[in-house]
View 1 (cartoon, helix red, strand yellow):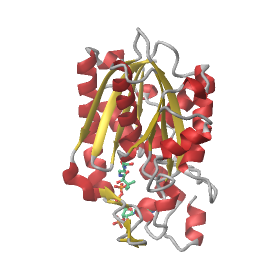
View 2 (cartoon, rainbow, N blue to C red):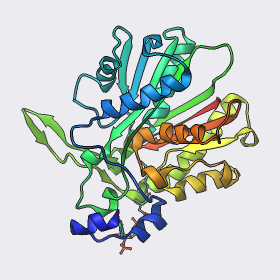
View 3 (cartoon, rainbow, N blue to C red):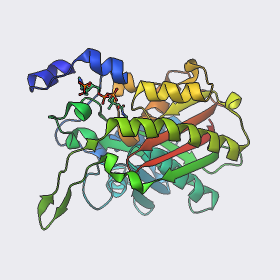
View 4 (cartoon, protein in one colour):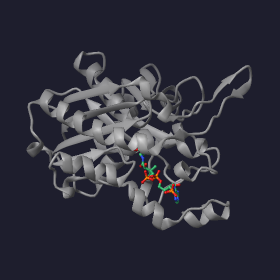
Length: 302
Ligand code: UT7
């Protein structure tokens, strides 16, 4: 990775990236491939794994900060690409907490009877908003998508959810530009105060984990797998240690994907399920944290 960036004149090294983050590889979508295309791929795989077809879906939520268009939502574009029409479809914008937010919203809609079979997707093309002159951010992020199908059932499923935001920290992780009058106003590339984000992330991932366990009436001993947002292996390991979870219960896939923002948790879940680690009946803790500042946790029996 570093060699390609060095060719662009950036002072970095594979050793720095691996030691400071745990990231060894990442993927960038080809030109013309958008979040909805990655979302379609992940959705078809999720539908197949769930033994469902697109026509069974009555709710689509896409978590993304890199939508295809300002509007309509990537969820509507995905719906059309799935060849269905009529069901509710919308995007959730909570940056790297997006998938956890989307899952909590889908869970609430199912539990209140507004939906029966939801497709919940995290999909991002962060390569499009990276500043390749900023070595503190451009080495971290990648593109990807992951999806789950969530259905009404008498058995959990999702045991508890816990979501938070603190807008006082808008500036520590943002893409501040916007479009107005036919022009890009402000800087449309990602900005991050890495150390500020790091410190907050370690703090809130611990508090959200404890809060969701308390809501569910469970303890850390009940957790079979911790799947946190895949931003930095040091943050992830510190979260596991604070919770006194052995590191072999931590699912880490950022070495192969980098930080894929809202896609990171469902991508890691997918890898963990398909590799046979997460099995039916296991108790899984999902955690998101990112721009906003946003954070949250979902505890579920798989
Ligand atoms: O997805 C949303 C959530 N995001 C996160 O959770 C990210 C949280 N933050 C982090 O993961 C870490 O803060 C980073 C990986 C972004 C940075 O790691 P760090 O250990 O906090 O490094 P640092 O910012 O303290 O920088 C240490 C040194 C600096 O050099 P000096 O001032 O010590 O000479 C940086 O300029 O590392 C330098 N540096 C680099 N060197 C080589 C920063 N980026 C690079 C780079 N290659 N890519």
